[in-house]
Every structure is written in C-alpha cells, then in structure tokens.
Image 1: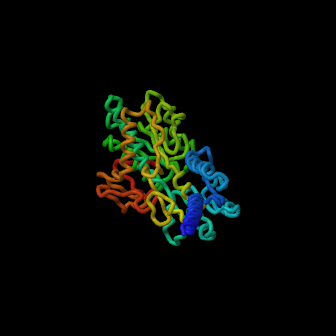
Image 2: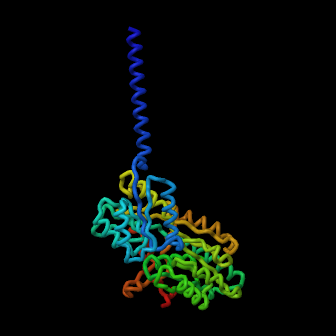
Image 3: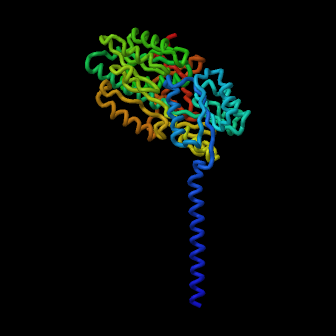
Length: 404
C-alpha cells in the first residue's frame, strides 16, 4: 500500500513538474511574443527633408531607435526630400516594397496618406502633425500623432522672459524695449499656437512684452529666415525665436553687432554651436515614444493605440512632458539668467502634473482667416483637448503684430 502511495506521489510530482515546464514555456513565449520575436516587418518613412534639416533629424532619431531596438526584425526604408504634393510616388514605392507600417512626417502628406490607407487596408499608416484620423471616413489603419509642443514653447518663453527681466533689472533695457521677434514658416494653427504659447511664457515674467511675427511661407529657407530675423532685429527686437527649420535666425542673432542686445530661442535643435553668445534654449518633440510603440504593436499584430501612453482620441494620440513626448533643448547657462535651470525644471513638473493652463489671460484673439471669429482668453482655451495637433489659431489683439 505504501509503495502504491509512493508511486502515486511520484506520478503526481512528475505531472506537476511537466505542467510547470509547460506553463513556464508558455509564459516565456508570451513575453517574447509581445515584441513579435518570431515576426519581421518592413517600416517606411516619408520625409520632407533630410539629415541637414532639424525637423527631419528629429524623426531620424526615432528611425535609428527602431534599428537599434529591433535589429533585423524591422527593416527600415526611407524616402527623403519628398516635397508636399509629390508624396504619392514615395507612398506607392513603400507599399510595393512590402512595408506594412508607414510613417508620413509632414502635415501636407495627410490627405494622400489617408487615401493610401483606404487603398491598402493591410498597411498601417501613421501621419504626424495632422488632424484627419477621426474625420470621415475613419479608417482602422490610419492614425495621427503629435507631441504637445506648446508646453516646450511656453517654457522657452519663460526662459526668454527671465533674460529680459535680468536686462531690465540691470538697467540695460527699459520695460518698453521688451520686444520679441518671431520667425514663423506659415500662418497655420501649429505655428500660431506655438508663438502664442511662447509669448505668454514671456509675458508671465514681463507683462509689458510685445511681439512681432514674420512669416517666410516656407519651412526651410536659410536665406529667408535669416533675412526676416535681421529685419526684426533692426526693428528693435531683443529676443528672436523661430518656428522654421534652418539655423538662419540663430546666425542672424550671432552676427549682430555686440553693441546691440539680441538673444535667440530655437526649435528642434540646439543652436549653441551656431550662436554660442546669443542662444538661450529651445524645445522639440521626441517622436520615439510613439514610433517605437507603433512598431511594437504591429510586430505583435495589435492595435497601435493599445500600445500607447498619452491622450488617445480614437485613432489620434498625443502627449507632452508627462510621457516624454516633449523635451527641452540644451540650456545655455553661460547666457541664461540666474535661476533659469531651476525654473525650467519646476515648470516641467507642473506640466507633468497637469497644473499649467497656458492659453489664458486678459487677451482677445482674432482668427486671421475670419475677423468675426473672436476668442476671449479670460475664459481659457485648452490646447490639444480633442486632437494631438495644435488647434489654437487666434492672433492676440494689440500685443502681437503680424508683418507681411
């Protein structure tokens, strides 16, 4: 009897051991399968520029991260210098090459990317900076995404405001000379939202500040951007900021006679090497959190949005400092006002906690395309409330001037 019971125990232990091995093997398989270790995909990118432009360089960081993170699991095919309006050829080439995940990186690609998503339902199309994922027709394989860059713009404005205050307190400037110049690419909501956030950051420190905006009507013209910056400097602007893709404005600031006060705030890339004596800081979107999550989701054959952390609205996703989608660029501590580093860190934490509402104050905004569309900012405006791309498109009366 005891022998029989012993054999039963042995059989039971053996059975449990076998089950444990099976469970362990299943768990290991599940762990590895999260990243689709047994699958391979081709990932396409369509770029409006190349490595020489800061905007495209930010996406190239994410592309490199794919290659580093996933190795031969994700083969990347990139199309560079594709002008808006010519993207269909690049999209077709990527589809024909077997890409099952395609990232389109310029606003003007959005309409074509969505059309291709309709034609190729087995390919996932992810369009940066656009607003059409949740408009009809809504497609399961078409997505939009963008970082809440207004947060970085606002903090950059605070950095500029602190520098202005330092100059005013030292007697080098009067409050009436707190004039800001802004070089913008186009009068799009993305640009208007950005320069308004920047301006309100400045005004949180210097309430008397005023700003003049000049548009280049191109994303990347060194000559035009530099010329606009020079004109603004000649008009008495002592801070030059930009939403454009070249180092032209930074060069204009650095080349200004040292007897004239001027400082620069950048975007997408540090300008410290271009303007070491005038550059203050800047901000950029980090595209890696979204792009790596999208690759992981496609490898695992899961919905892209289910792999994201941020504000998800249907097939649109965005986030700010809270999820690492927005970053501040290098702070030039040799030039920035005392205490700036600590203030930047404080503001980042406030954004992470959701305690900063930027678009609010004693201002009236006017839609430049419809003068009857007026916004009272005393009621506040929540940017990115329902869409990852910026939607604030009002020019603040009396304090911001747009020069043609």
